[in-house]
Image (cartoon, rainbow over all chains, first blue to last red; front, side):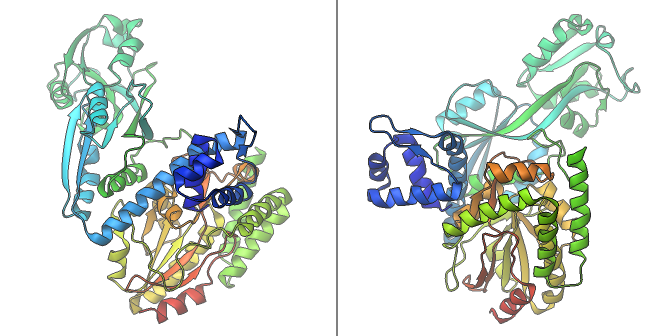
Length: 303
Length: 235
């Protein structure tokens, strides 16, 4: 596949007309037709069914269009990076991170990015799910890292980074700390500290509602750091992502029947051009080993 | 059960072919012959794909000898960002595209490259591999073959695609690959079944390509002797 062929195909998939696609790509129609034909040979099937009034994508065309778009965007970003590296441009980058994510998880990646781009000015924003969506919509943030955002905006692109189990954590001094596992009944007499800004707060509440833990007293804490400090001080216990609890040095007590996992994704806005630092950070996040099972949810052969 | 047995047999076959005391091309050929013997359908699917790629001249427009190699900045197996300019600061470099940690041909190739890299490093000549896999898998590849050079993650084949070096596997071959336990979706973290053409570029310190090997038949790789000779004559 060559980039120009994909560009022509994407134009064709949107216009469903060789004439309009050629206009949009600023190319003579026979060239566009030839490029599409060549792509069809390589992909092993027709992409567009030509009918006089109702041309439409074939099943293969439909299936391959989103995948081609992804390829094209990745390649386009690689070209932007190649050009700007040559010029040595200073860049700026604004990233929104959910309140439910510890910045410690990102520290290595951000410092490596900062090292590689001496001219980079980084802006790190924090917010709840809805605040993060607002930042992306307004353009205040180019990328966002967050748990599941309950958002139906069709320009919001999400790529899963990792799946992180959620479980019960207590302070080392807590009566449950030495237990191998806990049940919902164990929580009935406890105080639950809830991270109000977490995208999973609603899901956790739903899961506990009809169990013996449903009657437990609860406090809502806006800041994740505050919540961890309060759990350490034994004010209460918390149901939080595995990485966050472990990193804070709290004791994990697997809660039977909870079975909750959060998918952390990197979000961006479709159609907005990614700058060099933004494209590089996106790739670093996608490539990173987060220490959890693969985001595709499948086990891998050799490992 | 049958699938698991097949992937185990393939792993043994891979190890045997990797360790043959013959040139790289013969080791790759030995593995390809075994695959053809074990599963004629697989070989036919590969032949069909390679035929289509050849017919459309896939990879032909990638940087040619005398042209500049486009810059990149990609994370290595430890998450460190490595740029083409960083590599060229150390001397001429061979940039070798590979398909993934799961690919036996790439593992045979990387194994041979690892030995070549150790031999040529004192002459200030280096190698870097580019794969579409995430760090967990590049790290595995690195330790599996004791690779002394960086293995860079090219997510979504962005850099490869920008050089016109990516292709879609297609349904026919995808099925055969899955039955062998070769699943790039896991290591790539994305389900699009796009792979790079495993090409090799020798780049001089001025950033100009001095030699290249591009073959859409992924069973063919640049001969180690050719790569070494090109690296030695590059400035």
